[in-house]
Amino acid sequence: MSKKRVSFFSRRGFLKALGSFAALPAMSLSFLTTACFKRKTLAKRQSWPSKSDWDLLRERVGGRLFTVESPLKACVASPGSSSALEVLEKMKNPFYISDHPGATQSSGWLDSWKTEVSPYMVAAENSSDIVAAVNFAREHGVKLVVKTTGHDYLGRSSAADSLLVWTHHMRKVTVHESFIPAGSSGPGVPAVTAQAGARWLEAYDAVTNRHGRYVQGGGCTSVGVTGGFIQGGGFGSLSKKFGIASGSMLEAEVVLADGSVVVASEYQNEDLFWALRGGGGGTFGVVTRMSLLTHEIPKTFGVFKGSIRAGSCESFRELLEAFIRLYDEILGNERWGEQVKVKGDNSIELSMVFHGLTEVEAREVWKPFFANLESRPGEFKVALDVFVMPARELWNYKYLANKHPELLTRDERKGQPEGQYWWASNQGEVSRYIYSYQSRWVPQNLFKPAHAKRLAELFFQMSRHHSFSLHFNKGQAGASAEAVERGRKTSVNPTVFDAAAQIIMNDGELDAYPDIEGHAPDSGRGREALRRMNAAMKLLRDATPGAGTYSNEADFHEPDWQESFWGTNYPKLLSIKRKYDPTGLFRTHHSVGSEI
Picture 1: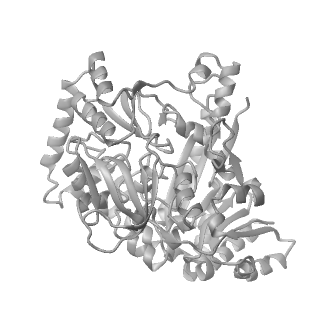
Picture 2: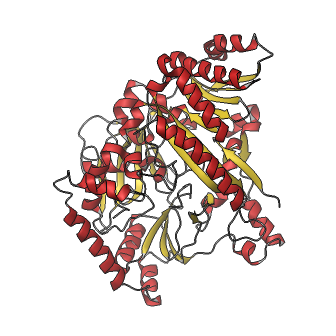
Picture 3: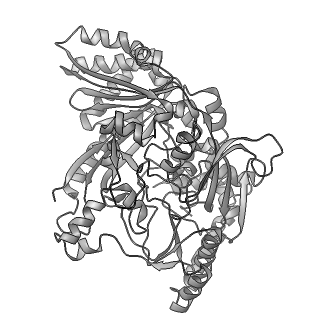
């Protein structure tokens, strides 16, 4: 089986953190000493649990403690065998990965991490199962890992020598006409409640297909609802209209490090509620269910796709500047989202999503921009396509399969629901090995006319090193007033509200697995890609001091990650971490408190 290469557009932080602690009366350095002492003491005191310990846990969770094997076991033992090839084919299906406790969406990251399997897992069916797992991990000093669906670039869904809490079977989704958050005496609001293992496709089916409303979620249909996506902030195609996904959170039930179960909302356990809305998944506790605000759905959703190739470097500079000016004048608002790819071959690719417009109205927005380009066929080659659908049909499998089958890949496994599918455009993210993934927000002011030429030159110079994409839905500058109001109540880095877009550079390899003969990633090619991305990102970092980025889609080696991911919110988040998890039971890479 051949391997395919794909480019995606789809350490001094500890010392800096020490400086921020000095400003906090409750965050004295004595806490650092105490917390470190507790963790080290725990590690020295505990050894790996005995068989009788595991047997007792199995009894406490009703027999739902199991050993775990990697789905790739046969591939490692017998590479090239028919059984190995069968598994590798299955690993191209994100729902198969979701359904297997030992699988993750990404297979690893160059010189950083690779998927590792927990020896034991609790296949949780209720909060009590999760409480038992948390208590066991705390009492025995065992690392705890939570997997919802395994969509995580930073390798936080797996770990060797750990106890896995697998929430896959907790998938109930309930739609409410009038939901009242815990502790509130006010009127109810339309909402949806999802258990810890629910995927976005299931939430969209309940909210939109069955009830005609909209919930702000992820683009990939197989991503989990309650896990790192929302707890890390969460962006969808229409985030400029409906806001950061964590801003829609109304309530969450959480298992804390001490084994207690609490419900957090704006009216009770308010500090924990704030931290869960953007402070990072798997950090403050295990969320067992979450309730989210739903919205009135627009009349239409549409996609504006196209490609434009410039005939020379100077024409490409002109094209970039023209688009920057167009965005500032017409596109930088709640109507538009998604991305524009800037490529090293002097071309851009448009994949913009819009709502509430007809096809004629959407084309009219871009008409002057394209009229100029099409009048100069010797300098610009233009291809364009626009389609619009009723918004209620966006996740309706039957409608999509009939009208736009090219957009879908259906889960063909036996026994799966008929409407279980993923977007064909997301295939390049399934079972990929990451060379590097780097991102940064671009401030809105750089798109203003006074800076347009300089920003175009920056984009041009970056593209000489590596292609990248501008995700306009992942910035909140120009978002609706309601979206911004909800978003500012979350713990996401406040710089997002001044950001027009998030730039993402990503390079990797499909069907690559570090431990499988014949499928090992090409590390030489990966390091060359990393070198080029680092060069491009340095130009962007130098031009955008303090801009920060989205913590769920960032570099594994992000420098000054506390400031980059959470900005001025980090000291408060760390204080809340100290309160609810003083010994650091919930600990993942570059999460709040992980530097201690």
